[in-house]
Length: 195
Image (cartoon, rainbow, N blue to C red; front, side, top):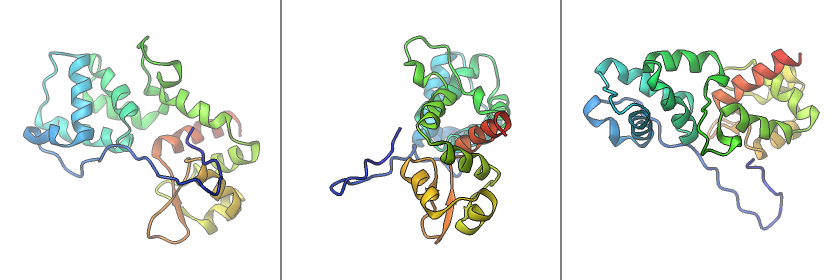
């Protein structure tokens, strides 16, 4: 959990994922840190892995879906033994529960993206969970006014979720918010499980 402590002396610095490529070439794939980490972990999972030019857009999409998250990239790469990179993308777009591993040397909290999100979710109040579930309907971000109208979210609710690193206040766009796509998917699942 990366929640702020709300102390006057506190400095906050937003930690983001690795840079996500906007385009990649096969011979320069490893020049991008997100692409390089995915390929490195994929080759570790399958030493015979060979990549073709048609795999590039799928690798780029994987990097985008996890927004450069090293854990997300490692979890996605672990599936190359059983699936093509295109199939991995398809499964990632379908469910946040896909990103999981059976690796015994990883802490249980990092064996799946769901486990990571469960930990953060359990630290929220019931009211914050309700707001997150309602906000999950928005793809691509939303305005403060839309959040208030659709999710009954106050400015204080939005601020609390930003401070807990579950929402982002979009830079340069006043009153606009978004969240990591995998967090949105998780909140959608929670909404379906607890309407």
